[in-house]
Image (cartoon, rainbow, N blue to C red; front, side, top):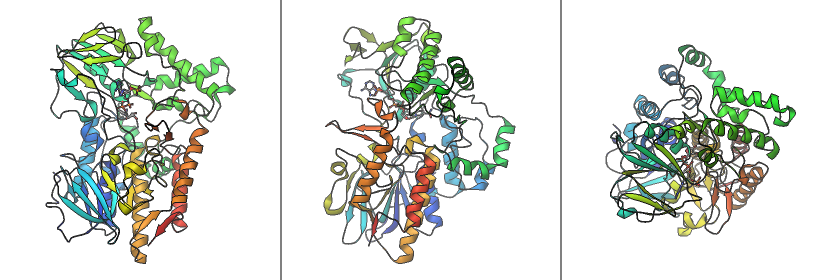
Length: 540
Ligand code: NAP
């Protein structure tokens, strides 16, 4: 088990690098930085490694990117040794893989578990960061790598009367380690994003009754076949070098079956055949049916209408089907969901759907959820209410940079980081999958590998030259923000009123958080900046 780091570094001891978070990004950061000769300590809030895959143990939790791709590329030996049991692994297998990596590369000795960072302060005179845990322990480091995860800070749903409810309330994003048995229970599930859509069929197979509270209907397509065939895995193992190269040269860090045609080139019949084929195969390849689904509203409508038709054909009760049909935003503008029999679940007699637009929750009582028009008695409530994507985990820490500047204030109303990697006013601090990087629009493990490699190279560059401070210049950061917003404005993504890709400030400003130009373009751009001597970064 990890935790061998023992006591925090002593009062006078200064680490080269503190890595915050031992999820996929943090584990690789420990490996890579240690290999490069840096003195590293990783601080992890959880009692185990794995990050979001440690916490998200809800029934049905599964990745919708193929495990042969949603895995590390840095070690050919690891790629050959590890065999995936499922083509799209579930949470237990992904966590087992990450735990294996931590052991295989002896990372645990550099990881301190149960260490949640509460605050971080930059000492300008000494060019170092002091990190303080919620227990009051301190760590000092010259550099910080924030591997805090882009989908790791659960969104707190405010439920009036929550304290009155006598039953159990579970959060999909912080699911208990022991098995939860819903047999004989009446269960409410609030939230119908990927976590809700994956867990609802599993809970409905067990519980006496399930009441789903839906705020915004999402588009979901059937998950691809999760069964792993030996010859398929063997083919990957034989060709990993080339396939990884293709992955890193792709738009999203994932090999998809990309169709270069426009949806508008084909007649209705031809288009429907393509959608039908992809629906049958399942998975996120559906959104690669045509090249212009994220760019042309007219093209997008054809895909959205196809899925709406599918929902109506699967769900037998027409009123329920209409409640489930997403409207008012382009398909793909909010994160696509994939499911195993999600829409079918509404044909079960023990499942009901509440449209929160028509029936908002008013309050919880001791044994029920009361809406504007009804009272629903329940034994347990499952909150599948999602995350504060990309920025939530960073803002949960009181981060103070130059002159005591607070990151929370700095990012109000617009969160921004140059290349998604560094923030002006916060020297020697790097973010992995931060705002302005592809993050959740890419394969986050591949994206983390790229970021960690980039950061390690920057630190080596500094070490070779005796430099001790790196910080993005304000103009470079502003230009990058403008660039990312302009790219997003050329797509349909901004047409969603709310989505995990968009941060809406309390004052109403909307910022597109992800770099939408494509993973390979981002890699090219960030590597070019490094090759040119870190254009846009100031050193001292
Ligand atoms: P999510 O996609 O953000 O969905 C959260 C759901 O909760 C939404 O339906 C949201 O409604 C609802 N909600 C939030 N606050 C609420 C409130 N106060 N009252 C009522 N409803 C509320 O979160 P998620 O499902 O946990 O997924 C998060 C991210 O992880 C996504 O990017 C997802 O794709 C990814 N993920 C991927 C997989 C996979 O690989 N298959 C699995 C799980 C998660 P609104 O939409 O109206 O806000």
